[in-house]
Amino acid sequence: PIYSGCEYRTQEESEQMLEAILNWVPVFDDYNVDTVFENHVHAFKRTKPLKASRYSPDNGTVYLGDGAWGAPINNCKKDTSEIFEEQESKHHAWIGRVYVDKIAVSYTHLRAHETGRNLVCRLLLEKKKTKR
Image (cartoon, rainbow, N blue to C red; front, side, top):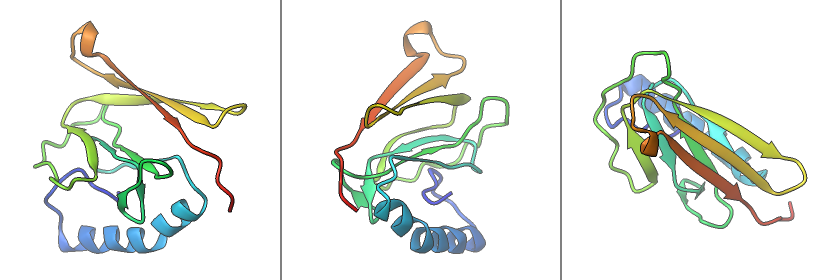
C-alpha cells in the first residue's frame, strides 16, 4: 500500500511505499481522485484527506484499506502518523457507491463480530469541483 497502517515494514516494503508515493500520489493529486482502495496488510485503515501526503480537508484523497473479511487479519503495531483517521485489526469489508449526478462518493464500512450499534461506519466524501 501507499500508506500502510502498520508501523513495521521491511526495507523492501519501505522502498516500494516510497516509490508509490513518488509515482502515484502526484497522479491522484493532479486528477483530484476522491478515494484510493489499497490492499496487502489485512488491517483496516482510513486516512484523512491527503494531498501531497499532507492533510487537505477540501480536496484531498482518502486512502482506504485493507479488505480482511475472510482473510486472516494482521495484528501489527499501528502507524502513529497523523495522516490516519482510523486504524484497527478487525475483520471488515467496504461497500462503495459512486453517484454520477453528484460530486459525492459513499462508503459503508462493515465490521465483523461487533454489536449492531458498531457494525457499520458510514463515510460520505463530497468534493468541490476543481479545474484541472
